[in-house]
Image (tube, rainbow, N blue to C red):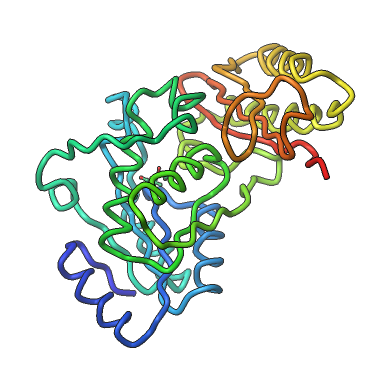
Length: 283
Ligand code: PAF
């Protein structure tokens, strides 16, 4: 594996590969890699000639300085995992390399970015759009891979790609879960053993709620999920929304959408966990 730390060097390597007609798959990450990331890499390897994985904790998407400070950074282990996963290029830039000057761009991300994470974390999605647009412009991948755990983020990236005219296939990949159902996340390492033991209740309760659709009204399902998670000692729901999978807009009736998705964020102590579940699609 080739570990590259500068934009110029990455550009050089990739234009040589593109000149030979090679397809390039990009997996953007913030490091602290786990099996969820590895599943994106596996998919990217299957679909493309060359796989580039970026490892960069992007400061502009953190609206909470404490969250940025405590975000796990495990570069050595990440590079080992990427080598073992058969990645061709690890792109590991510094903040100065990615942001030689302040990025003042404000993206018109529209309604997909104003609800849920957009409402709770002002500026977060603009920061995601900044870094992903930079990566797309540098790598010019054929395809880019994102995990459905951050379901809303994928909709935002699609919108950014459309705004910026990137001709890149955005591939969404299913959530990877621990055997007990907890969605894999770099933040899980911050859970204490007690918190780790209760966190799987989130997915269990979301899964139970699927059986309530479509006979139980949407607002009652929302209440069921919120109340059941809050009744679990140590968990506190920040929001639970049932939205249309494409527009991210909350629905009030099941028949308003073909595919409804329930998106939740839950505090487990000071660790903010995110998860989602798809309700049965309507024909
Ligand atoms: O999902 C993430 O890890 C980040 O938001 C991303 C897409 C790598 C951008 O920093």
